[in-house]
Amino acid sequence: MSERSTSPGHEPADRPDQPGTDQTGPAGGQPGGQRDPEQAEQTLLEQMGGVSGLAYSAVPIVVFVLVSSLTSLMPAIWTAIGTAVLIAVVRVIRKEPLQPAISGLLGVAVCCFIAYRSGETKGFFLLGIWTSLVYGGVFLVSVIARWPLVGVAWSALNGLGFRWRQQPRAMRGYDLATLAWVVVFGAKWIVQRWLYDADLTGWLAFARIAMSYPLTALALVVTVWAIRRAGKVAEEQAERERAEDRAAEERLRAAHPGPAHSPTAHSPTGQPRPPGPAAG
Image (cartoon, rainbow, N blue to C red; front, side, top):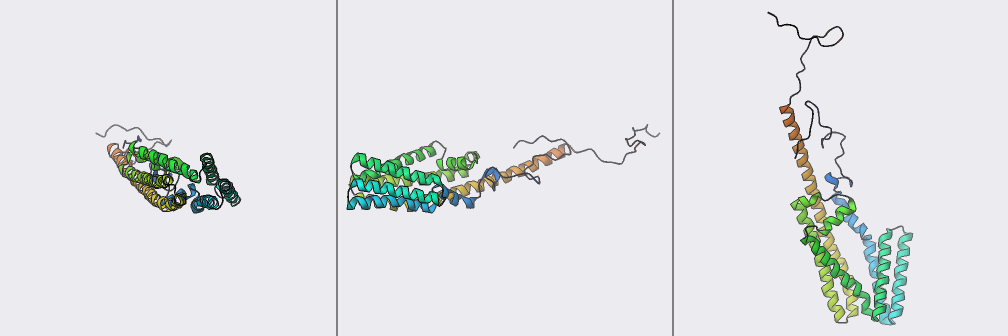
């Protein structure tokens, strides 16, 4: 920690523990801009559309499989798209976040298009299967490259910066959280690809829904733990920096003591008199 330049006898203007100095970053609440750990789980769920968003995502899948088993592919496609549109409208009316609603609608539309082009009901699930493989690969590469995607995404979304990359404990936490998502995506790809190849469409739909909630919840738990760990590390680092600043200030004061304030004679104009000759 480099010593800040100060003039002898004066307090540095930017001491972290100086009263009135803002010690929080852009996100507020934690040193270095780290968001309060208690807000991590809620914020992650909000970015995924909340608990209701996770539930809504299952409805078009169930509708598609039920209608296709009772009728044929085309009625199932139009029913699933209509259900997705209805869900998006309901979410807009309820003033819920718009991005998850639009993403869900587009996802269902693309899945239906693939099913239409393939001419098979199970084609509806191809996008999710291959998306899981791509996401798992990207998350794994980010860990290998020492830029764990959980930490990068959380910092970018909340404007926290990337100082945690110089903090081994925070890095390990984000590595583990990112690897947890690798396991989630990898498990989804392996199981659902096997069911797809076995032409078990009903079980494929069940696996798509059943694997989403438990595995996503597990990955979220590890992610929240990693965010809290990084926040604690950032707070400890900020406290060490404040202690180093105080020690540097004390060393500067000891090396450059201020002038002694002893009584001096003053002229009638209020200015100090020049020293007279020494008394003999």
